[in-house]
Length: 486
Image 1 (cartoon, rainbow, N blue to C red):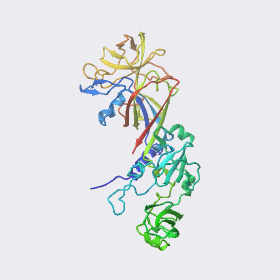
Image 2 (image 1 turned 60 degrees about the horizontal axis):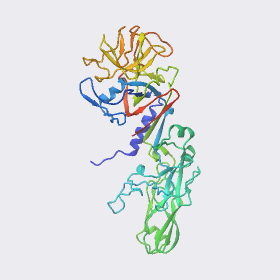
Image 3 (image 1 turned 135 degrees about the vertical axis):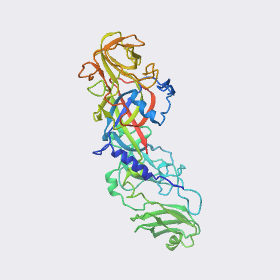
Image 4 (image 1 turned 45 degrees about the horizontal axis):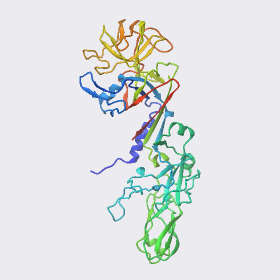
């Protein structure tokens, strides 16, 4: 059976996701970074080939169980996402002179009366939210286009924040919606997307069911020239009226004189125009443009199609006093969004989490090198170096599920253990772990092995992105924006 999922369902889902960050019993979300080693074709622990592409052209992650487990293997760190790090978003559409903008219509995609042709926008869009019917100006104001002067080019940038409809010298009519705040510009404005929010002053001034725009569908012919007033907008609302101008027998303008209230549908017939004085007019059709629920500007998120959610997270150098969480010694190629992970067997809650394994070694000979393979001959354990802290003799490393990156000769992911020597395979460096258990962080160095602060395979991986390598530095900030479409 023919069916659709409406935009309202998509917005409902974006609202539920957005609320998860602020509800008292909501979800805890973390942004993870990982993959310090280059992308390549490798062999998994089950002997199957794993083609990951290259650093310049990584492959798109598969949506399967493997892809939801593997990110934990080479994860470096994770940062908690707070309610201030998230916003509703819409595609960014900058106002540009000479552009013909689409108009807001309530009926894109419907069949025009008496035809099998669907109503589309000037740009060819068959749905409102695919149409270019709103703009962001140089003053960072957002306006909705209500009339484009019969598909003429826009040459006058709209300005001002008045709640009434703005008419510019090029014949366009605009509705001011909101202004991007300094915070929204800094955190939620990208090349392709921007934050969307409702301006309370605009929302309070909106009138539910008002009619502000009527458009000529068919001009008709044979009518008495002049401006004919007092023509009622018929429908389920009240008090709406228009005047109609007839020139050379055809309708050339329709002006709303009273917007009225409560309309969810409306009509103006040829007979009404004739009765108002356009004697002899035939074939005229007027489209009554129905406003969104609450009126223009009442709910900008719904009106502009805010079924996108943007997450903004900044990684500032080593990020926290615990510098072992976000190391700057290595690059990363993978970004993940993790829901409700555990740390130490309980729900994670701290701002940052170290995701690498670590070991305190003594009697070090040589220097362990970033990304080199390390081995422990006695146990058969294999790993990859993430960072070597030569001051405190802490070796941070990962173990993956690929035979050339962390699985021993028997196909097992054997853990480094005991006071058995660890050897760097490219550098020849060696070191002896001091004991088998301990807690390792930047403030309290004891001895031995330390597990990651984020528990492997806990929570749910909601998003995975493979990308070209990002090099980190102590004086550098990486600003990561994720845009999720519902």
